[in-house]
Image (cartoon, rainbow, N blue to C red; front, side, top):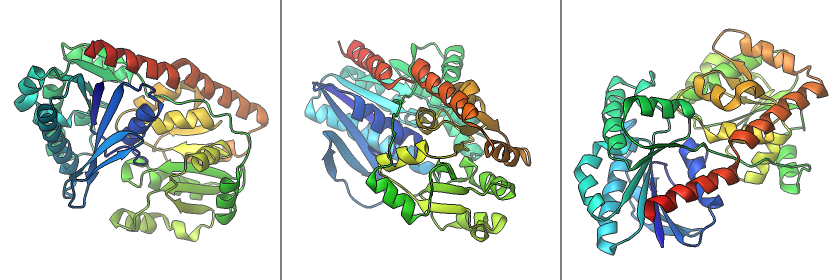
Length: 384
């Protein structure tokens, strides 16, 4: 039996976050009866329960909320817990797969112990965290220190971005492997009953809305998207699927945009039903993707596999994924507005052209079955 412990996401089958989507896709599509997956889950409630869901062993790890330091604390506590568990249970054939480099703050103190127990460490940096300017300087400093220690302690570094892989190769003497995140092409041709009921309830009509699926945080450019949409002449709706919270960010958003005065803008809350999400993507006029910082996010890849027209914030990670299959916007005033007015008048030919390019990107670079085979190969090679 092989044991794969994945640390760094907030849990298994959580929603909207990039790492969380990746973990769900990896585990749910990895077909091997000789594998046990362990995923610690961040909990803000005082408990240490262990649940088994779809065969995945999920350990609740309690961490009080303390801003940017929350995930550092969570990863460190999870690493210490599994180090003890591996020793206590005398577990064999163990891989610890670290998502992000936050574990670097503790790894020098436990690496020797893990090596003696035969544990292999894979790290996926995701992005170059210390270069994200919106983060406080102390977090960036810790991220750079942690990155160095985590990468140097790894048996293998998996990169889901070619740009990140180049950075690792230039700065570290470590073995790397490029394995992108992936998706399957969705051949949805019908509106099923539950999606139809949802769309009717929210007064959403096929091809009569622009879709945004997003975590409710500033880095996803929700404010920019709303402002530019409100300036456009489109008669279509802006449907925002988000885990919206009425917090300080919500209050600021309301104050700066007055979106509640525009009947076209519809916050429909979070949707956790994959069938409904998929069909909403398929039947949107276009998908607007505003992810500004960090690495490659699997939601953009899922957008390409389902939605013909993808309007995407321009940064190096997003362009690596979309290439010429997307329409790009920046912070420049009126740019997104003009794109929306242009897309509003697209003919069938333009839809087919962008749609075909998007599907080709999935086939050539982000095919999920091919990616699963690559993961099987590296797991088997490390544990043979």
